[in-house]
Image (cartoon, rainbow, N blue to C red; front, side, top):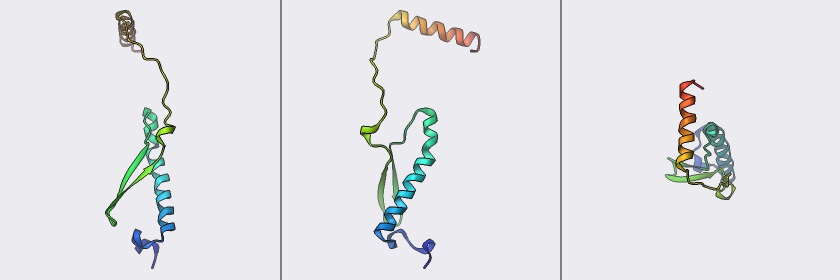
Length: 95
């Protein structure tokens, strides 16, 4: 019986783990475009129609997320005016 005719559950547990690892790597590659917009796919949930079960590929552990520490600051009216001025200049001169 060729591999293409086998259902997922007919593979050994070790082979299933290898297939899942390959799928995880492919999903990381496929979702890499999200980085262009400063998004990170932390996990992907997949559904196996044969076994009727969900599986989750953990791409990044929550403890590994690259959050930046920043001190939040309340904007003053002067800060808002400065921002609006820069936006006006940007729009006025097509910068």
